[in-house]
Structures are given as structure tokens and as C-alpha cells.
Image (cartoon, rainbow, N blue to C red; front, side, top):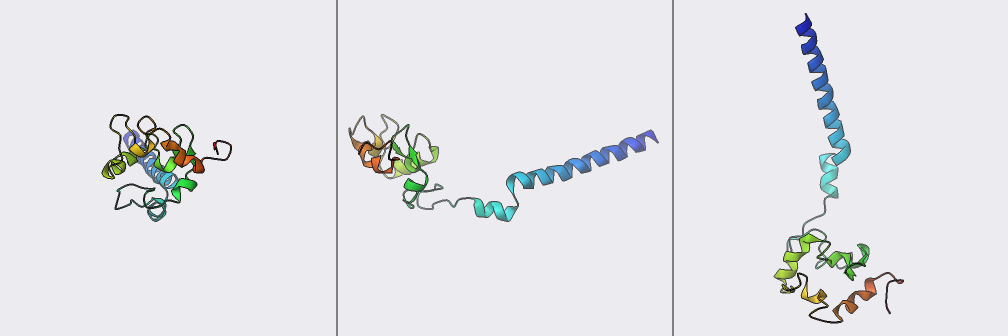
Length: 125
């Protein structure tokens, strides 16, 4: 009789854990159809999500990376997924580990082209 009670108790605990786990997963990740809709598409040309090369509206919508002086959409120091895309475009400074088009050490003044995306109080215009 004791063994039967332990078995029933174990089954109840396992069932509760399974139901709770399922509910928790759905609450955290959402249902499959909703999470698929929310997942950003991967750009086929550059193999990245939120592709700044194909969707230039990201320069404004993602904001400005004040720490690195470029729009967040193209900040390779904040977005690890961009490095390969810049390398494929032959826009990479291997010496400094960032796009040549953002390398102030090799191209002094190059970051000035991005000031128009900075918030007005940060802009040097």
C-alpha cells in the first residue's frame, strides 16, 4: 500500500511538472506560430538578420551607437553578426578589426559621415 501511494504521488508530481513546463515554455517563448512571425528574417544576400545593407531604414530605427560613433545597425563592435558581411564587401580593416569605412585610424574623419544619425545633442554639426 505504501508503494502504491508513492507511485501515485510520483505520477502526480511528474504530471504537474510536465504541465507546468509546457505552460512555462509557451509563456516564455510563445506558441510556435507567434514566435515564427516575431523572428526576424535572415537576409539571403548577406546572411544576417536586420540587414543594414538591404534595409537602410535601420540606420534611424536602431539608433546611434555613441560609444563607437556609428549607427547601431552597422556597429560591428556591438553586432558580431556583421563582420563577415563587411569582409564579403571588401570593407574590412584587419589591422584594427573593424570596417575600413569606420576606421578612423586609417581614414581620419571617416566617422563624420555618420554624424547625421546621431541624436541632436550628440551631433557636432
